[in-house]
Length: 284
Image 1: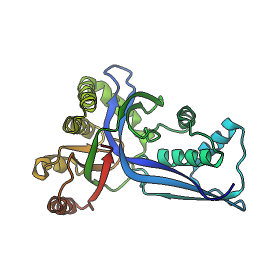
Image 2 (image 1 turned 135 degrees about the vertical axis):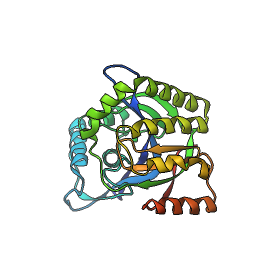
Image 3 (image 1 turned 120 degrees about the vertical axis):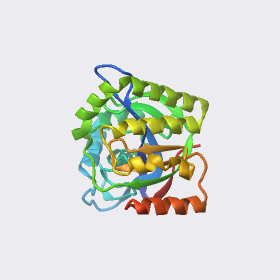
Image 4 (image 1 turned 60 degrees about the vertical axis):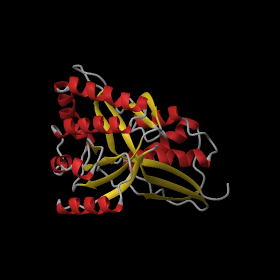
């Protein structure tokens, strides 16, 4: 082996939808993650063996990968870098795992098989669909892709990350109870969202994402959300999105906002006590 091998995986800006796949007493948690141009990176350089500076979940993923293929790690140095804050709803741990698996696939010149990735994720945690390079309706607990939604939709975003972190496992029970109470509203929201994707209608997707965010506010409220929603029309945003089990709230713009609007957005979020970030989400 010669040279550095890397694995890269994008994160998310929360979700455009998180809720039941369909109304009923035993709901599956379905998500349409909102990919963002922020990444986790894992690098391997052949040479003298060094300790692996990977997190616990990534180390577990590496062990499972090696066991699945009957392989042993060659000696070398591992380094990591991530743009994704931990525990705020940007899929940082899943992105770390997938980046690790992609790096390992590169080391051994193996294809990064989606079924293998899903099997490893299923053994570790609920996951987002960051292992795909397109939108998808995904069952996060069952690790099953229900429908691929393509790459036609994209948004410009302005968002903030509120203080604190969210333990996804700890909030699962109240979420499921909320989904049972609001199952019909969620089912209609998801229907509208999928229609928007099918038509390539970014505005329709943004409207449905806003509905999902409003429903989420009832069970996992964001401190800034009500103010953000109330000022959507002022900034000409097409919708509002959140990290449903995280700390992130922001605006969706089908068209890139100009410098004046960006300045106004920054001032608005600063008045709420937060630093505004801008990023491109989705594809399109």
